[in-house]
Structures are given as C-alpha cells and as structure tokens.
Length: 200
Image (cartoon, rainbow, N blue to C red; front, side, top):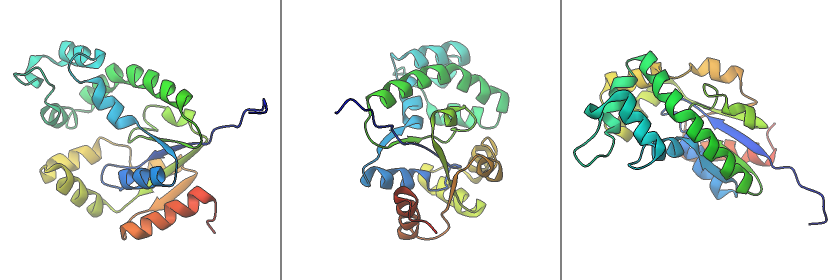
C-alpha cells in the first residue's frame, strides 16, 4: 500500500536438540510471527514420492525403508548421528531442496518471519536472517528432554547432541541468547521481551 515496501523482519531461531527451541517457536507463532519450520520441511522432503525420498533411497539403500516404502527415520537417524560423514552426506542431499522451499515460503509470508531450524548455522540459513536467536539450556536438561520426547536411549540422545554444533559455538553467531533452564512461563517471558524489544 502506498507504494513503499515494508521490510520484513526475519528471525533465525536455533538451538541444540532438547533446548526448548520448538517451544519458543510455537510461542512466537502465538505472538503473530509467521514461523517456517525448516526441520519439518526437511522431514517432508523425504516423504514417499518427494525428490528427497528418491535421493535418500539411492544414496543409502533400501535397508532404511519400511515395507510400505516410507523412510524409517529412527533407523536412519541412529545410523547418521553416530557417523558424522554420513550425516554430512544426508544433509548435502536434502539441503538444496529445503533451501528452495524455504525461500518460496519466505517470499509468500508477511510480517515477522521466523526460520525455526536446528541446523541454522551449519547450513548457512542464518544468512537469510536479520537476527539470530539461540535457545540455550544445560546439557542434562537437553538430554532429558530428548529422551522423553523421542523415546530413545541415552546413547542415541548423546550422539544426536554430539552431531550438532556446540552451544557455545552457536552463541558466537547469536544476536540474542535465550536461557531455558526454568519453566515454560519463564521461557515465554524472555521470548516476549525480545520479540517486542523490551529487554534490559
């Protein structure tokens, strides 16, 4: 309207698995932001019939697929999270497909856009953001949340964390660090303050 284009605010939201990033993203959605769940897009790319599904099958073989043709994500996850080179190979297959869809969704979105992505820094998606937010939590908190959420072993949870950038490394890229070692209400308060610019 009026010919002058309002610049979109793009927040890149990241954090290790179990940090509470998804809770922060959900609350940002409640505050009116348009949340793009990049991790979900990556998962959807390997649904049957999608380009990522065919690429993963060709690269990793039939052994990671169920009888109905769907990808056994739990089995593949256990495999790649304990083998860094294989995880890199999987990400290299899916990343270009994910980037293309993210850009399309960003172009269609209005207002504040949140890129919710565990691998925001690793994949270079932070280059699309105006500000990077990192949700941080203690290691024990993260391991406990991962095991409870995904029903996986302690070892698998440790491998998953080990496959991600160290939290201190993530924080080097952050414009905002949101500590999440307390209650959900405390997390929401910190997110709200940063969203509306009322911190400190």
